[in-house]
Amino acid sequence: MTSKQRTTTAPGLGANSLAKRNLAKWAGGRGSRLGPWPVVVLCLVIAAFSLLPLGFVVGATATTGWDTVATLVFRPRVGELLLNTLLLVLITVPLCVVIGVGGAWLVERTSLAGHKAWAVLLAAPLAIPAFVNSYAWVSAIPSLGGIFGGVLISVLSYFPLVYIPVAAVLSRLDPALEQSASSLGLGPWRIFFRVVLPQLRLATAGGALLVSLHLLAEYGAFAMIAFDTFTTAIYDQFRSTFNGAAANMLASVLVVFCLLLLLAESKARGSARYARVGAGVQSSPGRLTLGLFQGPSQLALIAVSVLALGVPLWHVGRWLIAGGAAIWQRSDLLQTLLSTFGYGLAGALLTIVLAFPLAYLVVRHAGAVSKVLEAVNYISSSMPGIVVALALVTITVHNVPAIYQSSLVLVFAYALLFMPRALVNLRAGLAQVPYELDEAAQSLGKPPLVAFLRVTLRLSAPAAAGGAALVFLGIVNELTATLLLAPNGTRTLATAFWSLSSEIDYMGAAPYALLMILLSAPMTYLLFVQSKKAAGQ
Image (tube, rainbow, N blue to C red; front, side, top):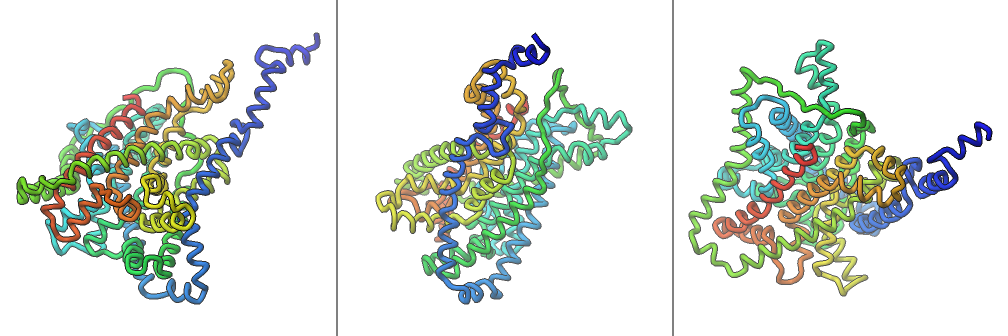
């Protein structure tokens, strides 16, 4: 037998093995840039449904006519809204990154006293809805408003979106690179900026994108302090004209804003791999001694916690005490709580199921197709809940009247709105699962689907749980889409709170605010725990 013949009949390289490899490549294995065709088709279907709100905006714009479009877009009012929104994003996002990354580094990599307690406290503000935060700060400072008020409330509400993923990544980074840099004479600060910080790029960019999208879509927090953004203006226009051209044009500008943010995040994210493959056990990272910086670090974290947790909890408690037992005797309180819990669970499950195929495609088969499909889903979520809601109202009324104003449509709207929360977590989780493990399982005779279920899906489960917790939090706090899409007679904690606080009945709104916080708190803690489990702690 010749050398060539021996090679072709060697174990693992026989005809059957080669056929399996060719079939896997044809079906979209790692050798295929596009990805497995069933996953691609599923992602295309999901993307098509995600484009429904955008199609509504584009269709409304096309029927308006260019002259009217130019008149409505190029006017001083749009310039004012653009400036407010731009300043809000440019100031809030860097502050959230500084607080999130700085807090995560102190908790995970330094000798910070009480670091375990601080780890929970820095994640806890995520359980307080932004409009409840605004309600508390208006109670404390009735004159609060403008860009200062918008930035203050936004930073205190959204910095955990950066802190949680960055802390999870910091706690599981292999310290080998840092040890090598230290042996070359680099000091702690140079190691942080030159070695550690670049490895946080994926988590930081994802968290910053989530903060940006929340700023573009937030309505209640800014309406309560009378700070005008595109979202508040769109809501006011739709409320007065239902389907007016002015609101459609504002929504179009907002979509362009979202596209620019997606391009910036994609550029910042890069294409580097963050998974570790190799022999040996990863050592635990050491903690930098703070020394004289222990006191200032504690004071900084105390200040953040007091502003983000102390102020809202104090004022909610103050209104509860002022209202007494009478405010707890509303007949719809229990039903409202159960309704909110049910919608949260259903929406979180649907969103994770829809987001997983796309996250898999983006991480394992990165390319132009996956980036476009990912961007399509972000576009829908960037639009205010009012735009998504009215798009679904229009579509269901004219095409599927049987499901108009049903729970099915409302849960679908939640999935469209909160897909990025699941995508960012799933994407980061899948990036930490080496694809070599999948290939190793297949080389041992496991079919691709079985290898995926036993390896990739199992290892990415903590990220999926974290994404589901974030989606649940979003649904509990969602306001505008719920107001329009909820079945008649259905109330959630958010809509009940908004109805009462809009009437300046702050005492009556306090129980709903407290219940939202109590319902969100376990999900926030679950998110924190899952991030630690993903880090192996």
